[in-house]
Amino acid sequence: MKVEELIDIGLTKNQAEIYLELLKNPSQTAGKLAKKLTIDRSFCYGITTSLVNKGLLNYIKKEGKRVFFASSPENFLKDFEEKKTKLEKIVEDLKKIKESPEEENLVNVYEGKDGLRVYVRDFLESDSFCTLGGNLSIFDKLKFEYKHYLKELNKKNIEGKIITSVKNKESIKDLYSNSKVKIKALKEIKTNVNFTIFKNKIAIYSAEETPYVIIIKNKNISEALKLYFDELWKN
Image 1 (cartoon, one colour):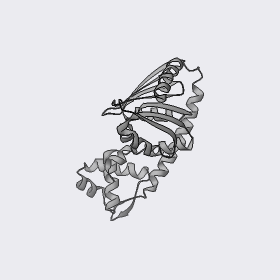
Image 2 (cartoon, one colour):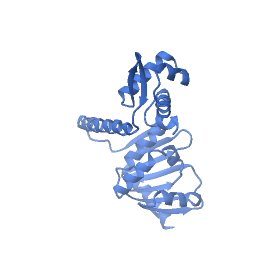
Image 3 (tube, one colour):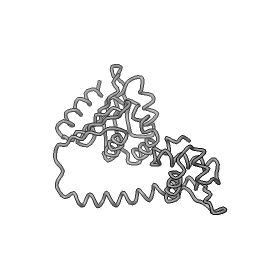
Image 4 (cartoon, one colour):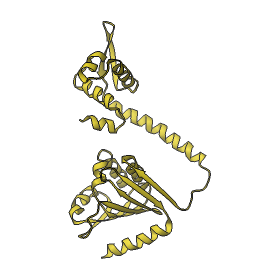
């Protein structure tokens, strides 16, 4: 387990380091943790308190000092479920606020891993999709989440077609092995940029270094590109 993996699910670097340290070596005071991890002593007290509030640490008092222990890793799932429940309620409330009709044509630009997450969540609300490119870098960028996305894709029976490079064909077939996604390869495809057509939208994205995602909502453009895609698929 790496510190970066805990950072990816919401902890700060110091919170992750303290939790992992106590998981490996329980029964430590904040002072001892501060010294071992070279964290400012007063700052360390605040971090341990925040982890206690999250349910990730507990403590006993021994000779007037708090001695900390890491709580069960299962508490991460409990925390996630609580946040998910709250977020679902917030989303429903926000939907009620948005009374004006959606614009016919929209262009949204996103940057970073969060942009990729926004795209994937939107993509998973579709019935079918077509992708040209099939570069594997998006799987690397979202490696901790993607297995859950694939599980949801399979559960919803989302159908798809992917035209990718000969180099990536077998790897992508393995990823989508239990789904309704069909794969074809073209020798000429060597780009790191992917195009996905879904609903009335087109997503153009690259997950190299700093990820970028452009999502265009336009029925005419998406239908036209779908025709081009279908011709490529036939050949």
